[in-house]
Length: 561
Image 1 (cartoon, helix red, strand yellow):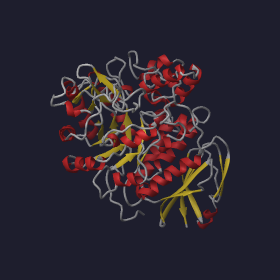
Image 2 (cartoon, one colour):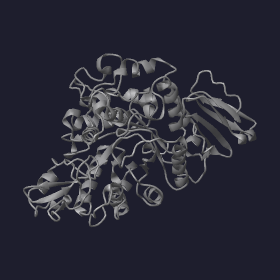
Image 3 (cartoon, one colour):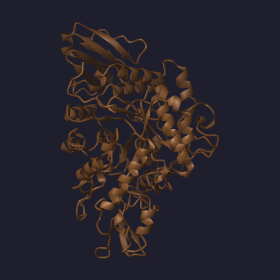
Image 4 (cartoon, rainbow, N blue to C red):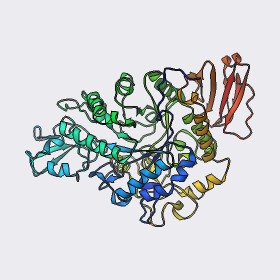
């Protein structure tokens, strides 16, 4: 049973599969994944049971930041193919019963975009106000803001004698959303892609498009975030985007909204405000690393805090708006290496995490390779890494006294490149990703962990994902039903009840590598239970009131009163 007040939407009932094109499948032997490579694997993607493909940026780009620096929003990156390949991908994705959403990068462009090249020519150029240009202040940068990729957030232009703002790399100048012409230009681009047939957008750092007026100095990076996140006109801009574009299409939107919490979440995704359908919140990926400090130093974390984050997300939006659910993406290390055990309990913990992700309320997002249990790479040398932020952090911290060994250990754990190593298709050279030299090394464990092996083994992580997705699709209670957290302070077991009074399910997850005991006195209110899912072949739980769990054991039960 599902509450009647929920508005059914296709994107609420969907499961999304994220593709990082550069690392998915190379079709022409140049070592770089491309659109035709994705086309060749659509049947594999469909076989998982997902409904939506989210494509990281494929627009024309000089690749300072792997496509998040766009030089032409209406053209395709040369390495990936051309617009005809893109049109075919859209068509074939639809033909196979799936939808396709793209990444919208609208906070900044590449410095090689025609808008910025015009903007640099003169202070009175019509495109000057497309970006945030400021004169020097007392011979220095206009303010003391830092870039997310390290160093100052301003770059000086010798020809015009002013600075431009770049919250990310200096080749990614920030757009000036105060300029109505900029906003209209972005809306025109969005409309162009919708007319081409796409089904929605994931919006990169979208809550940074409105900055605090005057761009004041910040005492620290945390204060700077307050000046650039959820700025004074953010909601106005997104509501305008809906009026001008989004409301005209049956589409889905999800915003990357680092730092958005509490009432700001409600304001952004409430169904009566016409803003975004859902957002990515980042609290759970900040528990074990201080993203504000930016030093990749590991922090101790507790499962009780992890549980409270997911419970708060659910309770906050119940009956109001919709959540996204994810454990990793292209900017995060591998979820299995982070929240599970990628060695002796790789299979069990990967299945446990799949059980977790696919039994939460909210739209689940699976990242390429997550469904076969891919792990962090742990390359032996910094020379093997390609991620700008990892390389900068390594060089900066080593120059300030941290040992190279310590920094490599941090990067092994948290580098974005952990998610960006090539997809592991089979046990052939380079994991079947390319016949050439891959742009970044393949994880050395590709001979044991690959899709060919996973598809052939009926007990694999891949088949478990398929079964969990089918379970979710067969009963809308997993999509819309209620959520109740149990045993909030238990530091090993994450347990919760899903559903409504007439139909309820118990999910029990051991997030530890230890055998542990879970006691649930309220379980006595149910005369019996039916086991629906177990990640151990010899599941042996008899009573839901008092349960002994093996390392990373997961169970899903139907409760019968």
